[in-house]
Image 1: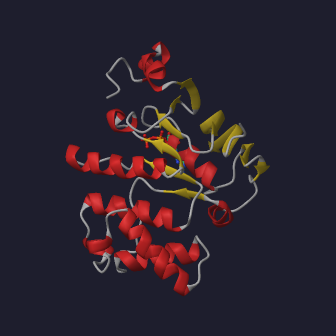
Image 2: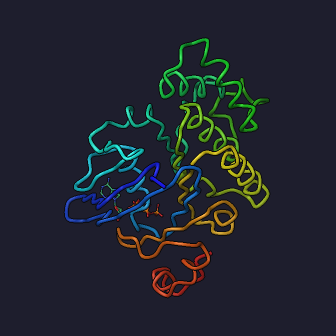
Length: 241
Ligand SMILES: Nc1ncnc2c1ncn2[C@@H]1O[C@H](COP(=O)(O)OP(=O)(O)OP(=O)(O)O)[C@@H](O)[C@H]1O
C-alpha cells in the first residue's frame, strides 16, 4: 500500500546539531502511528519538517507519493496535513467557535457560510459545543486540548499530527481525550501521535516508532518496540512510562 505521508532521508540541522538525522518514516491511510523517544530526540522537529514549519537540510517528503518538500506550511495544510502543538495556540481573545471558524476559513479554505456549518459540526465532534461562546483564554486544560484538536480538524485534514496532546491531563481527562482520538481513527483519519504517556498512546496506535538523538532506533508492533533493548537503553534504564 502506498504511504499517505512519508519522509525519506530527513535531516534538519540547527547549527552543528542534527536534530533530525537521517529519518525515514511513513504512515499509511487509516493508520495510527505512535512516536516516542526521550526528550530532545527530535520528535517535534520531525513534525515541523513534515508540516513545513521550516526548510529541511536534506530529504524528501511525499504526500500520496508526490513530493511536497518545497511547499510552504499553508499549502501542505490545504493538501490535508494538520498539526497540533505541544502548547495549544488558540487566539485567546476569540471565542471557541470563532477559533474553529478561523481555522476552517484559513486552513480549510471555506467561505464564511460553509465555515459556520463546519465549525459547528467540529465543536460537536470534539465535545466543545456547550463552550462555543466562551473565550478561548478562559478554557481549562482539557478543553484547550480539545480546541487545539478542533482547530486542526477544521482544516479538513487527511493526516493529523498530534504533538504530546496528553501532557498535563488527569487520568480521567486522558480517558476522554483517548476516546475522542479513537473516534477520529474509527472515522478513517490517519494519525501520527507523539506522546510520552505510553498507556494512552498504546490504546490508539497500530505501529510505533522510537526516536533518539535524531534517529529512528526501532519501529514496528508497539509491544515489540517497547521491549527492544536499544529503546530501553535510550530511556536510560528507566521505565519509559
Ligand atoms: N529552533 C531550534 N533551534 C535550535 N535547536 C533546536 C530548535 N528546535 C529544536 N532544537 C533542538 O533539537 C533537538 C531536538 O528537539 P525536539 O524538540 O525536536 O525534541 P523532542 O524529541 O520533541 O523533545 P521533547 O520530548 O522534549 O519535546 C533538541 O536538542 C533541541 O534543543
